[in-house]
Length: 256
Image (tube, rainbow, N blue to C red; front, side, top):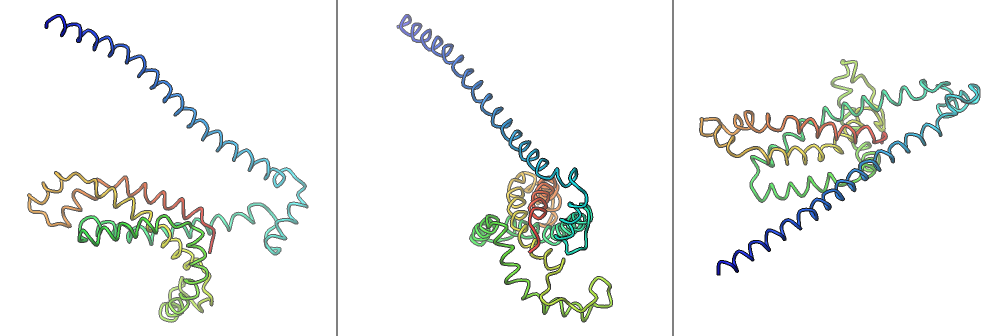
């Protein structure tokens, strides 16, 4: 019996030794594949940048008279240079995206807190599905819906704002009809990016350490105090990441 058990042990040890080089080779193959995939992404991005530079090079190096004529035709005679044409577009895009983020961020965080800590289980499950479905809708669908449905429906509201708050220069009337304005575009973009922020912050709030929550409640904290002391500090970096991802989507969406 002793010799048989010793032989079996030696066979198992030999098999384990033989399996180690095989595992190491698999690790090296996986590492090489991962590095190649990452390098391929960088090469693709570099190719896109190179393509855009080559296609846009005539704007900077071509005949100035011809370039000015092209910009004048595109802008209706209001711009005769690259920055005169692109500058207002960049400024408007940044302003609208920033307003959309300011509108959507706090509402999205509030919805995520409600789903995670306050909503009943069945209602929270339904809201989770709804948020995930809204986050998966393409941006162009939000743009078309906003331009065709929401913007015309927003005229009574902006008209009321111009009548009652027109003494503020920002809301001075009369309201445009249809209101294809910066404020309308910011509201549409806020609706578009809100599900993304809600989905990410909800997942981060759900990962808050249970022991920290129970410790705060055991020390006499209310539910809101527990959230303020444990969930919000834990999710701070994740909320910033979610807002930056949503800002990137808002910046990449043209005006409706």
